[in-house]
Length: 112
Picture 1 (tube, rainbow, N blue to C red):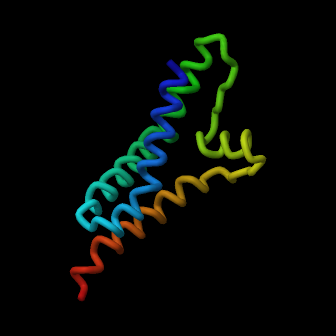
Picture 2 (spheres, rainbow, N blue to C red; picture 1 turned 90 degrees about the horizontal axis):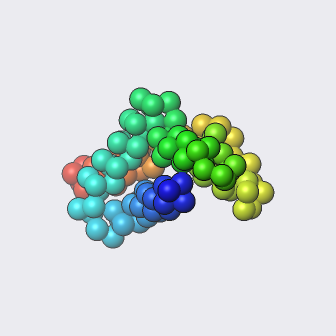
């Protein structure tokens, strides 16, 4: 079950990352991207951490696998696969930046 949550986590990460290029090609995608980013940031702010990471950690702890993340999903996998250390809070700041870019792309046609 933990692997299914990990795959869901990857799918949602790709969905969020692909959102800005999608918004540039299809402007009507803007509200979906803005809503997804706002929801992601709101849940992270409310829970204090990504709930999918918490769920995945819990499922790993209950199974025989000892791959407990206990930090950002992306930071864990970036270090595990590429040796890149991502500082705490960097992912959240990036999400805020993506939200600002999406808002700017969505509002810009109305400012002309």
